[in-house]
Image (cartoon, rainbow, N blue to C red; front, side, top):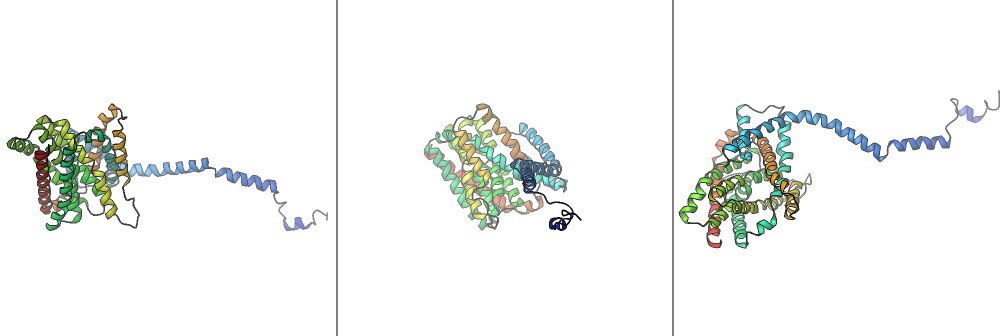
Length: 371
């Protein structure tokens, strides 16, 4: 037996010599190279792609139905401009859910549009508001807007409690009537834990019923009272629920630009109202942001538009894009409405009528005495 064969090292390692220091370092280098930032990024990208496939497969049927509903809403809006595509879409969603039903295959896509798409639509709404234009209305007009909105928002939940309504239903009616109709209701519904889909349905019914009635009532009452065109513009913008409804009155009365600008001043109040109630009502276990991110994005879009650097082509296109996205989101929300429960809840329509009367009376007094 040779010395090599009888060496202690050979006895301990019958399978052969162990790797040297250089070999170990080389293996470690290969391991480190396999976990470089670039390789990790590729693996993460691959994982995202693998997750995206099932997500698209699950959501596309509901998204496709929502897209068809938006096309229908836009077509109806061409013949009935007083009804915004968003309001038509939510009514269509409720009709589909209660007549034909919503299958499980559609639910993931409808949930996607009623939440994620809604947030994008609210954020883009800010691009329609330029602070210099709103401030140019003058302190008198801004005072009318602030007081009418604030009083209505404050008293409506109190009246709702007297009528026996839930806090969520009262809050949504207050938000929709005092700020900006369907968009405000959807944003508040998404941001707080107080309301359910039935509350949202009732609040949206208020917007459709009383906002549509205002299209005929506001010009008629203004003529009877003898309001000037400037006073009519302020009253319309400060009292009517939907931007489309304000535009319908303004176009027919020759006060379109001022009325819509006043209305956008009310829309600007959406962010602080939603932020206030989101911070109060969200559960603390999940630690949500005090201000929802889509509200922060809304304010960022307002600031961007106010710089005057947004191209005219973009500002002209944004209302159409926002209207389409909002219609899709509200169609998804509408599919969660149970009309049988809504019919039994006539008290929410009564609250909506009272809230509409409050904001109309306060804004009319302000327009008559300050404008």
